[in-house]
Length: 234
Ligand code: PEP
Image (cartoon, rainbow, N blue to C red; front, side):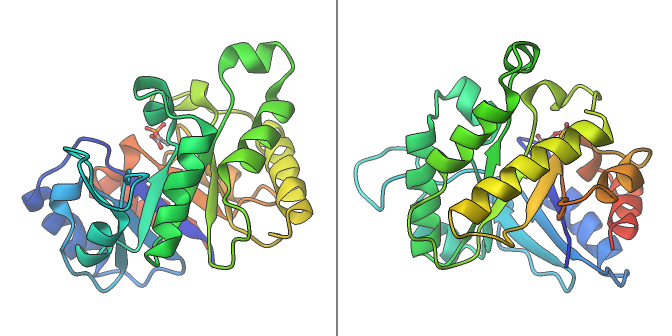
């Protein structure tokens, strides 16, 4: 089953979320729909949507003012958590080591980590895309994973700007990630594409080999854009 995962970033309100739930609950999705919302919006119930967070502490508990642990996320109803989103890597200096710790905490609490990897435009221009994403997967995925994880390939240059790689570029990157995961004994792990997904390009993207669904930012905020995307992914 493919995934359609929305990342609301620092947007939305309880009223907007309830409106989205009402509309998505009227559908019969043929995929797994997840909304990763701000921490404060966790706790809603939905027939068709599972909820996730957008970050988690790498620590279990203690004097870490402002942080939220995986146990707390679990208690708040989160089934998924995004780790290593490029905005966290960029604005909060998150390294692969930190991302791996966060993914480990999530797994320990029964939460599925959605581990993001992706190259910058400079790395792509320098011909380093495949090396960069291979290293990111190898270093960000915890060792000895026995539970579900999800990888999201999100080229940094495609996030939030309405530019997307070609289907061939997506196929190449997803093929490299699939090979890396197989080598690590994690064949079959869903690999989602994220970055500029919208109603116009969704059909071309989900048709690409090794694309197990999509991670959607801007277009997940409005039902009129998110619902057609949900309905296109089978
Ligand atoms: C994201 O932030 O994960 C994302 C994919 O954003 P957008 O769809 O807006 O490019």
